[in-house]
Structures are given as structure tokens and as C-alpha cells.
Length: 559
Image (cartoon, rainbow, N blue to C red):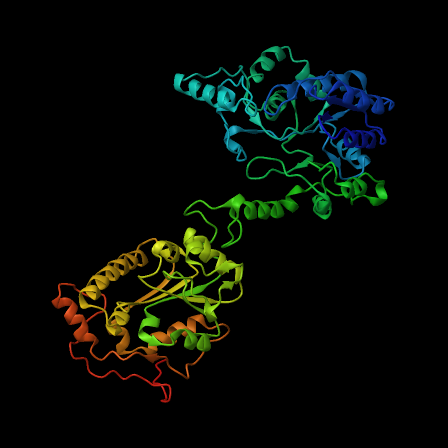
């Protein structure tokens, strides 16, 4: 048992092993103070089946862990002649089943070594590190304590083309540090005449505790089961999962003999598993694969998160987000300019929350004129424009279950346009050139109108390029203003059907279109002044009267 912290738990588990007749040799990290070690030693040494091995300084990724395992193994083999299998565990390991079941399981397999052992070409779990190079380069510096020197020395060896010679006859293997070897295999490794050569080589291998015994066991074992009897799960960064009290049922489902790492203060786990056979699990073959799905789901949740949920600890890389937003929403461009009171009409027709221009220059126009909405989002333009992307994604996340609709146009903050285009949840409906209607209705100086029209047309043109790009994932519909006013009800009905909350709604009332008499002449005047308003489509200079349904008339609906 390798111990470096939580010595009280290590003592509790060690005495649990010895209570079933299993001797335990404990190695305590030399970094543990003498006073702490002495108190721990004095508390354990009273047990006749507990021994302490020569102490080594153990640090992750270095030779000290192998040296500690060797020293404890040699003492185990020397002092306990009846031992048939040697099980390597840590102070944070916890037996999940009665020890007698493990004794019986190993007795039925007297010549089998349980050690995860795979060649570097077959190992998929190396995370952010070296696979083959860990055996061909030298690693005199600690990866944790001297990371700068570690990286510099690795890069220097790569530039120089340096490669270490692997001892003859060895094929490097890797696997879990936690093994269970037969006396025959373990003694053969420790008594090998070439051990000094192997030790000298592995002393400068990176993370040798995951390759020393895993490689040498292949030299001497007659029957290897390449798996560990210890349940040990790792996250996407290669760090071990820690089991807490609420993992009790999860550990029971694994049917494994031993699990690590257990949180030292997981009192419920220690009470549940360090029991007699009446409180233990059923006899069955260990099967950690039964809970792999849960761990895979946990890793996916941590790395990818939930659709549209952004967190400080997992802010996504651009283009690699797990869903830009959490729910579908609709964006309307040009509708409020072309129809009177379009927002209340759409809210009534679809049963959704319909906002005004959320990214308008003055403020975020929330539905109903609200100043704050779900998630404490303010209508302040300054706060919104600090991070427009987060503003929209937060709004969609905090209103989950309620469809959001809002207006957009070339006068709004355009920093949001790529998010809208890339988001599969966005339904974007655009009437191009409709921004000219408010200019047409205004009494501004015509020179100013021409200048403003040119500016808005440039902005909308760039926005349309984005919506038509190959990277667009949103559901986009684009009409020129001329073709839309010619037959407005068919596209409106289609949009309403898509937004419909439970079932498509047959429109019984049409939105009222603004009076466009003279709009064609207005566009011609812009042309005469040198500005070419091409986004509106082909409006005649003297347009014929448009059949503009009034609220008192029965609308003409096209399904």
C-alpha cells in the first residue's frame, strides 16, 4: 500500500485487509514528516500482519513510485511466504467487496497476472503527453515542479535528434499503475539478473510507474489478463476521478473489488464498504464497463457542456461550442418597418414573447417595454454591447421553454450577425430594403436621407453576405421588399406555422401594411441623386394601389 496522505483512512483500510488474513506492507512517502509518520507507524505496527518498507520520496511521473513499489514488494515476498498474489493499492483505495471474495477469486486463478499492459500503438488514453517518446527521450526534470525545464529539455532532445536505446528484448508497454501479480511473476521481475539495466533505463522514462511492471511482466508471465482489478477512472485531462458519498450506488453497480480515489471524508462510503459480508455486494465478475457510460456522459458534460450554457470554467473555443444557444428563436428583419404594430400582432398570432429591436442603438427593446428580463438582463445598451453574444445567449438560456422573437436591422449593433448566421436554432426572416420605409416617411433633408440610405444599404448588404455564406447554419428566408409586398400572406403564414408552439395556427387576422404610395418615386429620387437603392427590388415609379388588408376586412390567406 502506497501512502502519502489521509493516514487515518489508510490505517482503517489496512486493518480491514489484515482482518481477513491478508498481510499488508505499507510504504509512506518520505515527504511525510517524521512526527506524522511515527504516530501512524505506532498505531499500525501493533497489527502482526502490517509491515513498513523503506521510505522513498515519491513524486508524480518520477522513479520514486517504482522504487517504493519494489521495496514494498521485496519485503512482502521475503516476510510472507504464503502470499500467492501481491496486490498493489494506495492509501486512497477502498475495497468494495468482502476481502474473502477477492481471495477466492485469485485462488481460482493461481497463475494469472492482472495488469493492464498494452503497447504504445494500442494505448488511446495518453492525454496531453508523450507516448512513444517517453521511452526514447530522457526526463531528468519533474513535469510538475520544473515544467519549464522539462519542456525545454524535451524540445532540445527533439532538435538534436536524440533517442535512447531501449534495452534488448524489451517492448515497452503501458497501463494502469495498480496491478495484482503472482508471486512467480513479481519475484522474477525483482530477481532478474538484468534488473540493474532495466532500472537504469526506466529511471529516466517519463511516468515509469505506468510502464515498468507493465513491460517486464510481459517477459515472465505465462498468463496475463490485461486489466486492473482496481476501478480507477480518469477525466479528459488524465486526472483520476474522485469518488464521494453520492457515488455509493455507482460503485455498487461496478461489482469491482477495489476502487480509487476515494475522498478521505467520504464517511458514508467507508461505512458502507468496510463491513462484513452481510452488507457487501453480490458475488459476480468485476465489470467496470457497466458504469463507463456514466463516466463518458460526465466527461462529455464537462468538456462540451449543455447547449447554449456558457461558463467561466468552460468558455468555448470559437467554432467548437456545443450549441451556440439552448433553444429555437426567431429573428425578423424589415417587418416592423413594413407593417404597423407588427410586434403585438405576431405575439397574438404565435403565442410567443416578441421583442422589439434587442440590439437597437438606444436600448434593448424588451417585450412590453420591460427594463429587466429573465436572468437580470438590463435594457441598457452599454451593458448589452459589452458582449452582445453573451447577451443573446443568456437571454435564450434564461427563457428556456418560451420561444423568443425579436427584430433586427442595419441600424442595430451588427456584432451579433455571425452568431445569428452560425446558430442552427435561429430562424431568420429578412425583407431586404425595408429600412428605407422609415426614411420615406420622415421629413428629413433629402441630402441627409440619401447619405443615411447609402450607409444602411452597405450595412445590410454585408449582413446578407454573411447570411448567404457557406458557414450559415440558421434557417434563413430572404425576400426583396418588392416581391414581399406583392403577396405578403403566404410567407407570413409559413413563418407563423414554423413558430407555432403546439400546432400550426391558421391566421384569422393579417398585419396592417403601411401606406407605400409614392415609395417608388422616393427610390427614383435616390437614384437621381446618385444613390442606387438595389436591395428593395423593382418598384415602379407610380406604383399601382396595393391590396392592403385592413383589420376590419377579412384577410386573403394563402396556405
